[in-house]
Structures are given as structure tokens and as C-alpha cells.
Amino acid sequence: MIAPPPSPKSVRSGAKRRIFAAIALVIALLLVAGLLLQHHLWRRQQWNRLLTADSARMTQDRQLAAFALAEAKPLYLAHCSGCHAADMKGDRGKGAPNLADAHWLFGDGSVFEIERTILYGVRSEHGKSRNVTDMPAFGLTGRLSAAEIRNLVQYLLKLSGRPHDVQAAAEGRSLYFDVAKANCADCHGESAQGNSNYGAPDLTIDVWHDSDDGRVFYDAIYSGQHRIMPGWIDVLPLAQIRALAIYVYIAARGASND
Amino acid sequence: MIDWTRELRGSHRSVVLPAIGMIVGLALGGFGMFHTVPQAITVPPGYIALVNQKGILATDFMSQTAAATGKPFAQTTPAERNKTLQEMIDEELLVQRGVLLDLPETTTEVRDVMTAAVNAQADTASKSTPPTDEQLQAYYDAHRARYSTTGTMQVRDLLLRVGGYQNANQSTAQAQADAQDALYRLRAGVPITQVMQHFGLVDSGRADAEEVLDFAAKLHLGAKLFPAAAALSDGEISEPVVDGDGVHLLLMQRRQTPRAADFANVRPKVYSDYVESVAKRAQNQELSILRRDAQILIASPPPP
Image (tube, rainbow over all chains, first blue to last red; front, side):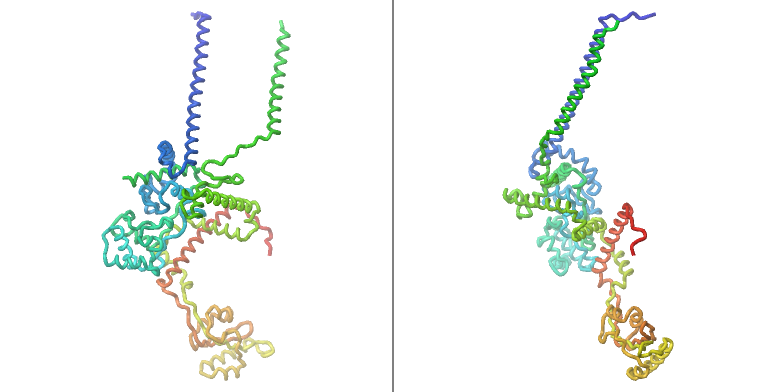
């Protein structure tokens, strides 16, 4: 049976529907494109703000800080967590320090200083990297005997508030200040509170040990330290490095506020 | 029936529209070619200045200002900041000029600095791992000679010339036989002057009159006589040694042999030598990679 031909009226209404549908689709597409463009422009604006805002105050801008954190997290996991660990607590074996505490080897822990470390690295052979001095290998070079190092370790345990041998610590103290022997005070300071210009850690805080035997200090004094961190200036855009600096800063601030 | 008016209108349109397009295109092209639009060059975020499109980072500027003035950047004055900025711009200009002048190609000092910097980068990673005691001991064992004290000697070198006006008819074999005889007499205790006179021995002039370090003795005695002398103890006389000028007898007067230093005494030197050797190995690896990837052509045949 042959279907009856459509009436002219129904043909016209079908065409109208298609036109309306097409117009609606175009409007919807334009809306989506507009939203995407707006989001893109907003992101670009945020990246620019990250670079132009005063680094000392930018973390007070909640919106900007939130943006930096969101952008930096995947960057951290991709580029930094391999050494500093996903939880930011570092890896002693790799010589990567804990970033989630408020103790800094280099700089004062400001966004500015963290950013400079990320930009140029530590002993990276970039001309602007942090590379003033090394921890000498006192044991390997024979400058200190094993017994002297053990005494020195006892003194450092005492400074950290750990259990220690009083007599050995007293002898270790003499070595600490002896310019012809260990001369630790030269970099770590007479108060042993370190010098962040040299990357000499504060020896009075109890964050370096994982046991009471002072093994960490013994190894560091015996074999020396020449930890390196690559500079990222030629790898990541400046804005991403700034975002990472804010990410690390906020992680450390969170630790200090705990 | 054909509507010729409509056909003509259609054919006009097919010519007119492309023509308008061409005119508009030419106009735009001509405008673009002959009208220079000043480009709005701005300093990108994160930079403090652009010098010939090369950026100076704001963080570097802040850091350098603080270092130059000795106070935090926030406390520096506009004049201090401007001074630092101008100095950084000057430095950048000079560096750019240096690159333009191809200084690495023309200036030895720049080449030296560049090669040293590349070597330093090559061994960066190797420096981060300290050696173990076992590695240092193994290195010391493998290079004991390097950690020996230098020996000294005071030796007398007697020569029985072969040929020349003094002994024109003397053959080497005859001189050797005479030297052997002289050696026998010297070892038997006959005074040196008497033996010298009897056989025509003379001081060669190669040995120093006083006690000298081994390296100096080697330099003066030569490669052939030095090992024979070095093997002698105080008062010993060497077997005859044939050299270019005749047959020699070496009389050791005073000998201090080189002594291997204890590992404990040379630890600092062993440590620095070891670290240096590791760095050198890393540099050589880097160089072998560079050579592998480079296209190096050497003239054939190579220059003499």
C-alpha cells in the first residue's frame, strides 16, 4: 500500500523544526565555546597574576593560592615526587629533604627563595644555583678518626636533645669548635643553628635522626655531603615554577601551623 | 526557452565576484606591505626587562639588587633598584655582543671557561655519591707508586769511552771487557783513582756531585743508566752499562729508595685523586657520546 503524500502544511512545520533545532545547536555551541574561551582567558589571567603579584603577599590571595595549588599538584607529582616523595617528606637515601616541614636548608622558606631553588637548583652547575660549599668528608679524607667522629656525634645528639654520652659529647664539643680539626662552627655557626646561605642545617632541631644512635650524623661527617638538585628553568615555564614554589610554601606553612 | 537575460546576469556574477575578491586581496596585501604597524612589544610577566628580546628575570633582578645593597629587596630604594637594573642590562648587552663577535671561536679564555663548564656539568652527578672506604683502598692499591715518597741518590758515573779521539781504537767489546775487569778490582777494594787511571775511566759528567731527587738523577743519567743506578744500595757498583758514549760503571755513594706511604697517611690525597678520577671518567663518557653523535672529518692523508 502506498503512503499518502505529506500535506504542504506538515512539510512546512517539519522544515521549521529543523531550522529551530539548527539555531538552537549553534547557540549551544556558541555558549560552550564562549564558556571555554572565558575559562581559558581566566586561566591565562591567573597565570599572569601569579607572575606579576608580589611573591611575599600572593599566598594571602585565596583565589590565586587555590589556583596555584590546583595547578602545581600534578606538576609536583610529575617532576618532584620522584626524589621528594609524593607526601613531600623527602627521601634521606636520595638526599632529598623533607619539604613538608618548616626547616629550610637554603633560603628563608619564602616563596621567593623556594622559587629560586626550583629555578636554578642546588649544585646543578647552573651559574645561579645554590652552590657555596660542600660538607667535607672528614672520615674518608682522614681529617677525623672514627673515634673523633663518634664524639662529635654525641655532641650533636646532645644539641638535638637526644640521649648522649656526656663525656664523649664534651670532647665532641671541642672538636666542633676546633678550627684545625672539624671546625663545624665555621658553617653551622657557634650556636649550631646553621646557615641557610651555605645550606648548613640547624643542628639544634631534632628532625635529622631516625634513631638514637646518630647514624645519620656519623655518615654525613664521615662521607661528606654533595647533594644536588637540578634547576628547572629550562624545563618548566616560569609560571609553573612559581606555582610549585607556592605549593611547597603552603605545604611547609601547614606543617608549621600544626 | 532560454532566458538570455538571466544567463547574462549569472555570467557577470561569476566574473564580478572573483574580481572584487582580487581587488580586496590586493588592497589588503598592499596595505600590509607598505604600512608598518608599530608592534606593541611588552615585557612578559615574570620579567623585569627585555634586551633585544632577551628577558631579564624579575627574580634575578630582585636577588641581585638585594645582594648588591646588602638588604632585603623590599627595603631597597628606587635609585638602588634602577642602578642594579641598568647594570644587568649592560651585562646582557655585553654578553649579546660577545655572542655576536663569536668569542668562543676567537677568545681562548672564553673557550677555556666553556670547556670547563661543560666538564663540570658532565661530572655533576658523579660528585653526589661519596666513595666508600673500600673504593679508596682499592684505588690506593692500584696506584701505590703514586703515593710513594721520592727517592734520592748520590752516585758517581765512571765512563770508559768507546771511539772518539781518546779511545779511537777501542771497540765496545774491548771496553766491556775492561770495564768488567775494573769492576772486579773496585769490588776487591782497589782505590777508585788507581782503577780509573789504570783503565782510562773518567767521570762522565752526567751524575750530580751532591745528593739529588730521583727525577733529577733520571733526567741527568738518562733512561738507560738510571734504572741500573736506582737498583743499587749504598756502596754498590753496577755491572757495566753500554750507552751511546761508551761503557759506564755506576758507584752508589748514598741511596734513599722511594717508600710507599701508608694509606692512612695519604688518605686526603687518595680521596681527592679518586674523586678527580671519577669526574674524569664522567667527562670522558660525555666526550665519547659527543664524538659518537658528531660528524668529524679528518683530512686524508692526515697532516704529518
